[in-house]
Length: 609
Image 1: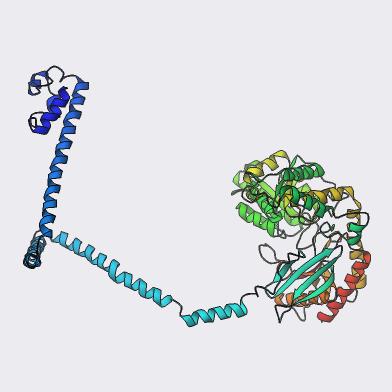
Image 2: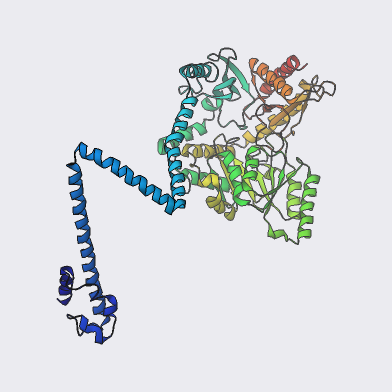
């Protein structure tokens, strides 16, 4: 009640800040006589705070009321202004301008610095809002294309820089055909059955027309022919297990898996394939990636970081080089398959350790090699690499992408071929599903720590959508078939031996005068290079054009092979020379190989002079 009375008294003006202040409340009891309503409680801190609250509230309300009076005055001014006539304004404006001029002159005399600053700011505002804005508009209009310019650019684009939207069947949904090639030469693959392929190649003069060919398929990396069964496989004793498994998976799961593996993209088909690969390679576990190249690059980058050391064969293929670059580790290259040079590099690193006083386990160190080199067709001397990595205490990252399903009694790859074991002699092994297994994706196998670490650190695993379930089922069906039919591997290895044995005989007129074999005799990828001619050396461009003509001539006569010079040059440490590449399949017969060698010989004789 007392506080309310004080509040009301303050509003009526009976109590002012001169008679009641915070200092008055904080004074001794003798001064409390100035506060008539709280004579006995002025020294109690709680009551003092409440009193202060009441006083402040009254003061704020009083301020608000005074502000309201100012608003009333403003309202009265606006009403007066509204009733002002034009004659009144004519008399008021000159006097106002005169008052402003006088004020400005007084300001120049009394505070010239203030005038200079305001003048600069005013000039800047005029420039930004008027002059600069007009300049931008003029520049925009100057950059605007005219109607003739637009028509000319559209004509160039239509005539030279695009393909016809309707006449070129890049993908045929009815036949399931796909295409590849360059801007000037599109190759459409309609079907692959056994060792044969049905292809169409674009007409160089009329890009809307295609020439159809039936050719022997010596261009695919599907060495076991899992993705291209022959007619006798389907109608005879066997069946297309890969297609059958894919159809069943599509009916069960649909097409996509809808997310990365670590979120909501893991399906039992992925786990089944991982378990099957781990069981086949006799490792603790396996991790599945949705892309073969991402598998190789992500595995390296997951384990090697800035400050670590990578000792890499200079001829490793693009995916491994990408992983080396992404790791940002220190990199030392050694000459391709040169074990003496590898030892030299390892000894240099050992000498650096002694000079810096660094222990071997202070830095993570890896040797990176391919078991079977994609761009050379050469076999890694794995037994010597393993001996050196154990001698100098390194870990081995081995890529078995092109040796899996090719080397070894059961197709486990180069480790089995050399009598070595997974995990023990190679800590991390990468295997692509895109070659002998005829699917898409890749798997890294190793011990439990190797696999689990990548589930959190493998970029291709964490950030890419997981593999469609039907691809995993297709890969597992191929793996099961490879295990159930070991004769496939034996047939492939026999075809490889036969091809290397027959090639010097069939092409004896060309070797080594015009062509030479540069791949190993155990490789299903047969590489032929032009023999160097010191009297008439050819540039790389000339070699590529020459080999491309050989490939075109072979296709016209029913043989599909590959010229590597036009596309094997990017993302590599060492660019290989232009070559012809023939790939051997288990589906090919000896008669197919003989025919291919004869067609190739005639093409080289016609083109290479």
